[in-house]
Amino acid sequence: MLKGKIEIRNFNWRTLVFTSILLASKFWEDIIWYNVDFVENLELYSLRSINRMESEFLSLCDYNIYVSAEKYEIYQA
Image (cartoon, rainbow, N blue to C red; front, side):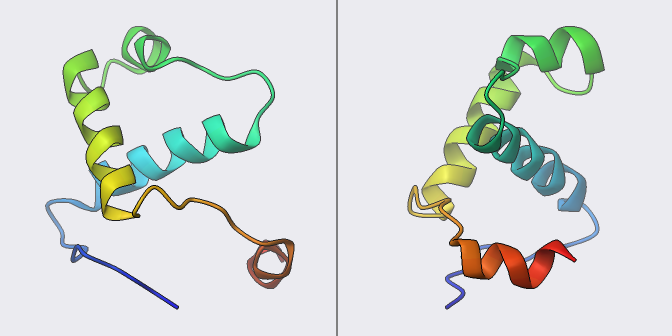
């Protein structure tokens, strides 16, 4: 079931992709980058912006970023 609360538009898709990758890397990887690491290495957004984007993204997902093994198998290929 999709519970989207935001529309993907031409002005926000990059921010959404960046934030989803940031959260996915924290969720999936054993060794994570901290938000400050993204700031220092990518120089795309300020630390304050990244923290805000992460917080808002999680809120929009109702803090539920779990993906079942079955769902992962569907999209993994």
